[in-house]
Image 1 (cartoon, rainbow, N blue to C red):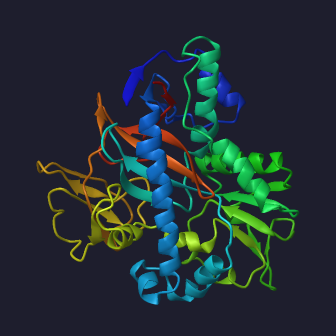
Image 2 (cartoon, rainbow, N blue to C red):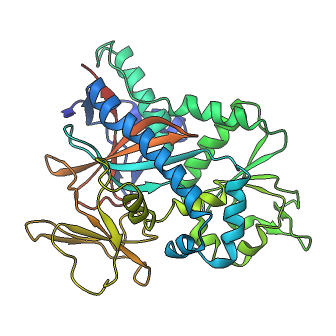
Length: 385
């Protein structure tokens, strides 16, 4: 695993703009960053990232099967009791799912360590699935990379397969919050994939979804929403007024309600409890004293933290790193600290994608902190032996 500095394509911004990748630069700072790329060997990809991703995904599916049958475990995840039946039903009926992302600490040697699961509303999808693949193809075409360079990236192909397998013949709505360019970029990409396999697809803002007196979810034209991909977390929905209407509605939700089990960090202690000692897992347990200082060599994480908010860690050397945020009253976990590798001035995080039930590719993000935030940068990668 190496970080290789390189020249940018002179026209990459025009390419991004023409493809609708409108969040490549955020507040004047690069989000997409092709001034360098990460190079892996095929063995590093297959042995250290692809295989563990598949194995951990299988463990997660086994864990969901346990949790839905246990009100005690659902309670440990701080899921509100009125939604237990809906979650259980969505699992037992096999409601389909599309995607998820695991975040790993990995330095090119030794087992990758799972830091967290993003299995309900993961973003950085378009740039991982499509734009970095376009970077690879164009750089090879222009003679900037060897012709035998490859990438661990079948995300787009597997998404096409996943949508085709749904065999939907009614409109599929894709919803994101009005003010988020990144979220809409994610849902627009998924909507385009759905259209390519013949599914009639429409965009709707989350805020514009209506509920009729009969309990049906509708769009602004009062048209029924039969299938809905919502880039809006289940833990928010559980506490919003329309949340209680979902179980009795006739709308199919993506991701399904059972994904709420895997979308908070309370799952990490359960994964460890049922798979203790697994080489890709970190020790984790519920933090029963969140007011105390974080012990050396541990990380404190709120169950529902996003983009690094309210995460605090103390390294073995006593360095304390923490981020502020809104999740001050949430339950917390303590997780064993696995430092991100440092390349130059940046810390590197590997996001490993699962499409359906298959490991499908990676995206690499960098931050100037040991805690990866929404100000991180996305860098392309390649495989070259």
